[in-house]
Length: 221
Image (cartoon, rainbow, N blue to C red; front, side, top):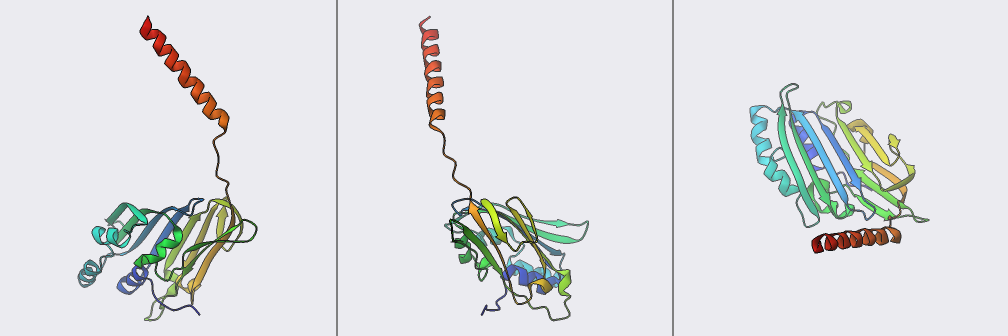
């Protein structure tokens, strides 16, 4: 049975503002490494909530960089900004990782059970568990939107995504959709690693040889 443990950033957004917008875009390579872009936002907080947000660090660049830094990640960019057109505050994090399942060691992904496992007949099975949220306190669960986009390195043969375009899969949920927890998953046949044909090396060597001979003759003249 899945434990009902709340993911940090998402729960804090929910409790602080009564709203939740979260988008996660992940590109996975054939060796299970990859990159991820996370964007979440909420209504600009009141003065009282601002103090709490500062303490929690969910909209603090230094704190976010620390949260996503590890021996298996490389943080490429952290951006925090206000959009006064709709009175929202945003956070964006972009980072690379060496293995998808290693992200389970980061606090923001604890209990997300990110994994890529070997399946039958040379397939791989990707999955991520989205933990449940508390929807009491007068909150309307349909207002909260979560979006997950994954680019998987192979031919998709089975999935539970809402939309698919080639190897791009998209899942969208409200808190009501998530209920007691939701697992997003896809089975794919990995792309074969492309090897450089030997003829390319031969041609490159010949071109280099011709250039060296030409330069040698030029110098001699």
